[in-house]
Image 1: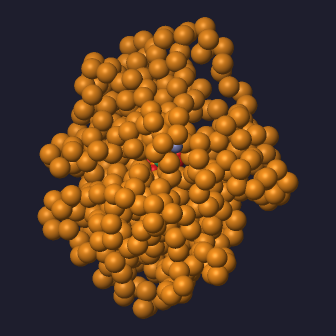
Image 2: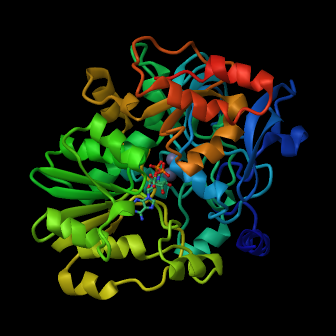
Image 3: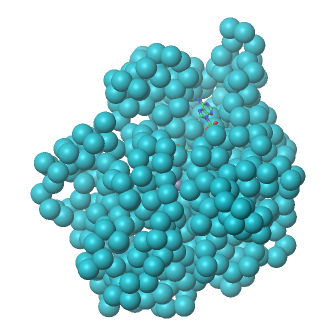
Length: 477
Ligand SMILES: NC(=O)c1ccc[n+]([C@@H]2O[C@H](COP(=O)([O-])OP(=O)(O)OC[C@H]3O[C@@H](n4cnc5c(N)ncnc54)[C@H](O)[C@@H]3O)[C@@H](O)[C@H]2O)c1
Ligand SMILES: [Zn+2]
Ligand SMILES: [Zn+2]
């Protein structure tokens, strides 16, 4: 209901493409083939939003170049992010039925607009999840998710006093761009938003420069983790896991991962043996996360990182307030963080929060000098070259997150499994292959027991044909 109201309000507010100098609100080229689809009318598979908790793979149409600086990319690798779950749940405003999701992909340049100078057809590239112009006040400082030229949304302007950058596949609140869970994507400002992939880096490693690697790195750097710090991380999904990795890289003395999903905590322990874990579903009666953390670290941790999200309420009060639209995000996690850090400690928020919250412990922030840092949407361009170098040198191995390889055809069945975070399936981070993908890169090792993983995904394949395909394509790492 809030989504419908937000769409209606945007229609009243919208004064045309005012603030954007690229074509926005083309979230599916098939919505108007004459204007948005390639004249060949070539079909492409794409994952579309159909309403809260409903997504569907459809035949859409290959997009066409709409602005001089557009690049059309054929997708050879895509993935699913915890951020997609917020869209899936209907927690983000201004979604429209049929919007193509996905904001992380790599592929090959297919065609370029007349304004493109750097990339050329045939180049292997990875895309930034955000669509930045590369030249405005913010982009010049590499704060590219604050770009002022690619999002015209009026509602966001009203809510935040500013707009964020345009984001691929992430609602009309961030520009209404068709996303990367598709076989082709139109990437505006392609020279700036596509990074060439060197020949020695396989797609299965390069893909994650789109978002998760740069995001977790940004969270750690922006919040100021330094040598000797003790750090607690709320959420041990892919972002929390990689944030833990980067904390150790920056010299943190202790890193404590918090979650209620046992297998994710075990995963973290297996990949990063030095990490300590706290399962909040197993707390002693009457205890709490801050109480346990304060037992583990004298005086509290130096730094707390939010890698979960504002939609995940724990108490009945916040669940009710969220359901009734009395708040947009729970304050529970941030309040836990406030009670867990040392006096004058720092809190970084990279998990997604969208609006207003109730019962927020602002007093403790002021009285104890706690630094509450919104990390923002991660400015990928600031970090992706540095992290690519780390991948090439072997210092950073993105495959520690990888659990499954799935066919784009099956992606709508993977969403609910990823959402449940079930023990059976153990979906952590997937690699989505398309008809343009290379065979799996050699030498990547399986992350865990193969049978368990296979079951999880094959169960969801509805037809026997699909099940057979799943058996062939949903390989393990
Ligand atoms: N700011 C950015 O640029 C950016 C980019 C990518 C992702 N994100 C956000 O980062 C967050 C994490 O992403 P992900 O892909 O790892 O997501 P994910 O959904 O796979 O993982 C989130 C984890 O948090 C855990 N969790 C939920 N409530 C919790 C709580 N109260 N305390 C501790 N743990 C809790 C869940 O069990 C889950 O394992 C998401 O909100 C995502 O939208 C932000
Ligand atoms: Zn993401
Ligand atoms: Zn810009």
